[in-house]
Figure 1: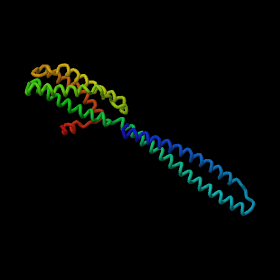
Figure 2 (figure 1 turned 60 degrees about the vertical axis):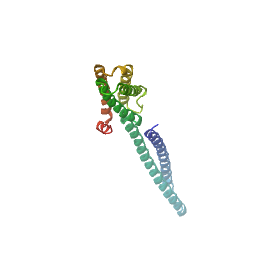
Figure 3 (figure 1 turned 90 degrees about the horizontal axis):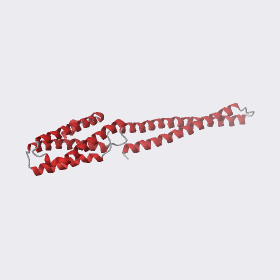
Length: 222
């Protein structure tokens, strides 16, 4: 589990405990208030008994104030911890997990390198052996995205968008693996795969838009 998962669980548990303390202090406050009312109804006949009643009443009133303060603090802590836990869950659902973020950034660079290799392969600008080796490596890396699944902590829309992107990457890589040896000095086939890359990038752009990925920052790291 991620750090935010643990934060949500721990925060929720503490919020529930604080809520239970609130209920306990509330019950004690009500019970002590009842005891105070009971003493107020009592009539003492002697000064000694009156003094005892007055002292007992003061103790109960102080106890009631402490219990009421405990109830208020417990309620505040319960609300704050609960809000914090659910905010952590919401934040995680609206942002890429570390694994998905790494997959997206690596996929971005793989597609960029693949486009460059397709251009070289179509024009036969480098040796056939080197170009074919690079195409095989990139195609295999892209096809490996078929093993990836979006984290379930994402929203349903996020999972659907990410999984469509992963599936598009898998299909592109799988198709290229079947024909990578035929792309060299074959500009038409290279162009066909360039068009396939553009289709995958449409899914990629949807992920970028949904999660506000900074493409300019990724370009700077190339």
